[in-house]
Image (cartoon, rainbow, N blue to C red; front, side):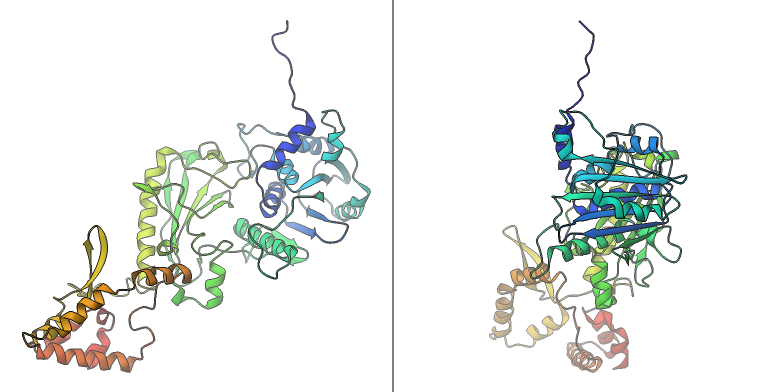
Length: 492
């Protein structure tokens, strides 16, 4: 009996199974464009037709192109070993992306490539494989309906065309917007995703790549608002060494109050402000992971929340760390090695802390140092293990009011207790979550004259409480929120 026997998987069964990798149409198209970049393309022309009888997705590039042997190898499943050393600019790894991405959306994949004046064609058709008795029968001709697309390729000196037909799995990701057509939703998702994933290739003024979707040029989306004057950027830090060295850079985006409405909406990205916070992992300038905290945290993993939504961190990986970071076939997931998790956590903790301060103080944090011994009218206490809020009776104004009452007058004390028992904590929390921002900041909407008038009244109260003018001014500057308006107090 032989020591071994060959047990190749039947083509029809395996090819159908490969359709379940979980691509969306935009992530599948991005995987195809990776090959265009590796082939040194300057332009990618994406054409999508999802209505009528002739439905297709076509990706055409002006890259190096492939000869017949190269094309045959590229169409083979697992066309390269993920463990072999690759060029530094290679965006692939498993030799599966072209096939798995295509099969996830369509039952027919045609690839035509032009090099050295000759065009070669290969095609996988899952319906044809279903009748091929389990054999891997790679067709050497295109369907007649592909002729117009191949003709456009032939107008180029070199390049490659990927054509998806028999589209049976193309659908919008997530729920459809009311009244919006599925095709419109899909096209928007494609354009926004490509602008995010390939931002560093598309960015002006000298783009390395131009992507055109149905004739429209894809715009790069910068998740870090690097050019905004209010964005806070930390220096790049290096972790690791040699070929496994990675770069880490923190960004704290501006508060909503420091952006225009259009800037704020655009900076929210594909998934929205809360979902887009966290780490952005790039491999050879191609985005793999857009947001999330990589399972890091103190005690338990951090979650995405409102107060840290301004925090974004850029990680730059070389393709030599693919295995250590567990890069998946779809190039949409990564996990940091155990050896550097603590370093990443400490770096992220600082960015998160600063981002939370910017969010809470509406971008004003750090404008001036906090007043020493700052007094606030409210204080947080624990009652029965739960947070509660009480009027601080040691606040200078509260002290003055309580001291000025007759001994048997409990009206103000009773009113304070009523306020404490009716703080609308749940309402504040619901409004914050639903509106995606904190309630109005102290004195927002008040004119300078109104703030001056209130400050003048409180100065009088403090003076009547036994303070001379100079000490009353200094004490008022230590009362929230007047610590933010020392210039107004000095004017009185």
